[in-house]
Length: 275
Image (cartoon, rainbow, N blue to C red; front, side, top):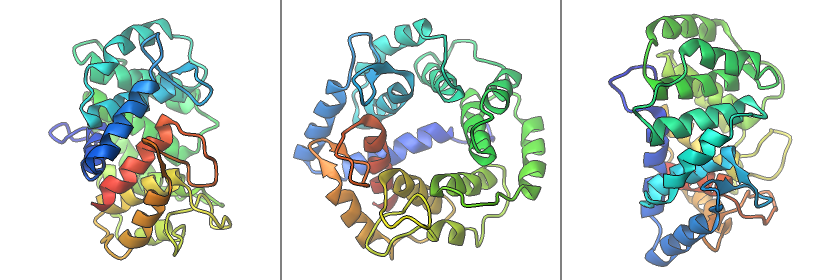
């Protein structure tokens, strides 16, 4: 992730979304394009589940637009980001940073120190492995002054071993974080496969019986990225993805029938990891 000659990870994510989108039939692609358009707000942002303009959902909306070829839609998003400078969480602040990286590539970006402050000081309630993943994603997108932080990250991740009943997405984020700094991930696929359900999908915790789209998308992406052969998992997971498609969007998979951009992102990510 930190190597400047490589494609930024957020662009890799978009490429997976595009693969998933291209695998859909023409009618389904048109349904999804309409769904994304209908989630625009007059402010230029994309809406959350309550119909309000939201930075977090706008990041998913932007990436979905890029994946589905709707490059004209996010043009007004820059103005919304400039107005929304009172962030309620570090995730919102990083979402704004990643939106600006994509839409205003020539704009002066935050320093590495400022990113560290955002994630590790303001984001104390976020699990350490996920803090690192968020920081690495933003730092990778900015693409400067990364050598020293790569060195420190390698040392930290070499000795950091998360304990407790971790959510599936955080366990996968930890494995991916190790990959990004060049540490070995061989054998670590088992820590993700523990969350796999035989009938399809991945669950948030080992104690949970039902799968969800977030855990499924993140797990399949990370497994694919570390070189795990997904062919044996593909049939059941494709069934899970198909069962949770509804009129242009992917559902959460856990019984909630609300449609939103976030789970549509994870559904396409899961599909793109399998095709």
